[in-house]
Image (cartoon, rainbow, N blue to C red; front, side):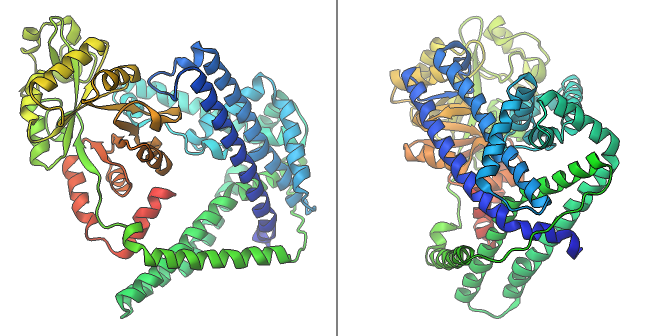
Length: 581
């Protein structure tokens, strides 16, 4: 075991230096790129482009230029974040001195062999598909990429779509596995993308059993080592603290210290994970090419004075962080949440969707508000329904705009009648804030004007928020009726989303990061997270500074709100840290 992990231990210093330098370089590049994007958006009269108006990217010169710059940036990111890292790993595997600048230059030059259709496919797979599928190398900039929850829910609702989705996923998985060594071929063997792809497929085909075995052993070894470190430096000390007869102050201070140590260990593990795995892949690449095990060559080294200084500074920062956390514990790790619970589609899963009964259920459960969806009928009334037809909820395949109000009133959702917007306003008045989504093909300025008129008619300006996935509609309401609260819903955006013309911004779960929440609050806007249904997701966002979560599981969320008030110091720290990392 000791001999097997020695090459990786000896490589940590070089990997650390490499990672710090590349993160600074790529961070500066992304900063400059974001500023350039903002200038392009500003020249088009926009502050952001979102999932609600993505056509902008393909219909204007600014949008097309943003796309081109984005693709070029992906190539640059792959050059610094992966190709140069492979050059580094070659030096580490062969026991050579690691010249970082030379590694960057060689990695960057290798991109020239990828400027072709095959290279574009490889880069797009690395940047967009690998993070989602979890197979193959990915870049740090897109490692948290995801498929929005509402899309996966839609796919899972249909057996046909689920089957087609499974076929597509399997096809891309096979493609990713076959090309696991494509970058090694491009960087180390100086092959064009197509030749590197063929070589990779041949190597995987001939050695897939050994590759699987080696991966399992490598991951198992790393997992065991990290588990031992975590037990010795985090779990065991925290357990001892919990049973010792310590004062509250001493217990809190020690908890802060060891949790901080755990955060540092986690951050270092994340910093070293990809380079160490690439080292193993590089060793396997050479082994499979020569047909026998390629032995690591370990280079001896001594700790430099600069490294000793870095360690000393790091320890000083840890001590300072512990002191600051102790002095401001209640502010940094608050007991209670300020997040409001908003029922999805009137009453969530706890009542027939988008019905008056759903509103009553949400109110009795203690929800702050309810989200509903309105559409216009053939004769100009507004009814509440989510889908484009009534097929799913009432067994009628017609669309609301194809039916009169009297026809729709003959339908029922469960045992409840399809309600009008007016009926929902009456039922929620004085009880719930009604987040009203302008939905479907009839969501236009006429709907906006009519909906606002009804809200004013019932005196509910302070109890109703107009929301939509269509930004131009929300912008129209906010500009024309500033007294009406508005909210824009998006699951992807580029630019200063926080500067959009509205009162609320609703983000899909995965895009509701700490930075996004802070940016929105910095512009004095409120943020909603949709649709947080899992218990872990609800707890996560209740521990952030999000102003509200839209959920189908109201009772579960309200129970969590109560439980948060009785957490230990350790639980409060862990919950808060999870919202940041």
